[in-house]
Amino acid sequence: MVLSLKDVRSWTVEEYHRMAQLGILAPEERVELIEGQVVPMSPKGPLHSATTQCAADYLRVLLAQATVRTQEPIQIGGTSEPEPDITVVRTHPRQYADRHPSAQDVFLVVEVADSSLQYDREQKARIYARAGLTDYWIIDVQERRVFVLREPGPEGYGREDLYPQEASLVPLAFPQVRVRFERLFPPA
Image (cartoon, rainbow, N blue to C red; front, side, top):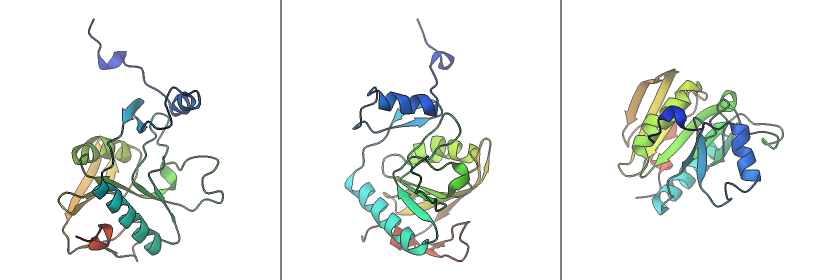
């Protein structure tokens, strides 16, 4: 018997949470819910971890009026709950103790790509664009470059710009802020 994609069971965010509560998904499993599928996350190497930490620390200094979260879930519709490396969200009175941030709460989402560049530029970009996330950055740690994706639509982002090392980046939600490229990476 051959299975097609239509035969694969799609999970909701609520069912995904229930699987974790029941121990079906073990706490040490690194998975996320993407378009109804429980997807394994790439292992984090030292360069990925160091870059995530540097970028998040720097963004926290620059964007004190927002909350910068690292590797925490955001809820996108009823069937996706990705865990971006960095998410800049509206400050919430209870620090999101009662729910995960939704697409409407997100100012900026950042993925740090070591081995996941293609996945982040294709699948992740598609779900973030469909959710209407207006500012999506991908930090490519291998080539020391940053992709900035904007103009979300149902099929993906309408605009993808590649920023070289000497550039400054400007988050859409914070036009007064200049993010110095080199501060997103650990020292070379």
